[in-house]
Image (cartoon, helix red, strand yellow):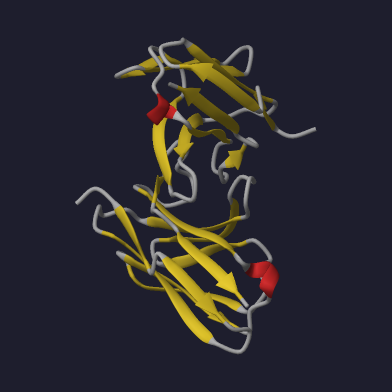
Length: 117
Length: 108
């Protein structure tokens, strides 16, 4: 299995809802990433997990809560989002851990298109 | 000034044409990535390179570390190559820094 999968593909939620995005990889990768991408813009890094520990939080609002239950799975829990949080949320993974490993190729998932009403 | 600059921002070509997209960066890096994104879709990694040249099918990527410059070439372009092409660099031990992307449209 050489891919990163993300579910759901599309999600529409109200500002009071609680929902979760899921990302899975079975390539044995030890770093996993969440990115947010607005239309016609490059991805913006949100979080990085390295060896199942949160290594980077790019000052993301607390209404986004990441979780890495095991080395294959990465979740992003959403609560009380705002309409401006509507975007494509991309997950990625890379073989090595983040620290001290330069040049590891990142494998991206297809993304979840999130719309907040 | 962005750490990663791509040119052109938009490119329209006729099917069969040879295409070049350029990427210049201003920091020391351990690797440079070329990524492809179709409309509304996820990102596909095309190449990761730290020196020289790589080829995959009709795609060729080159990098000149001294000049801090990379190019992505597409030979015999096809409408299915229409996508956004993104250059991203990775300074050692740090996270990917993305360019703004080049929107390529190949007309039949």
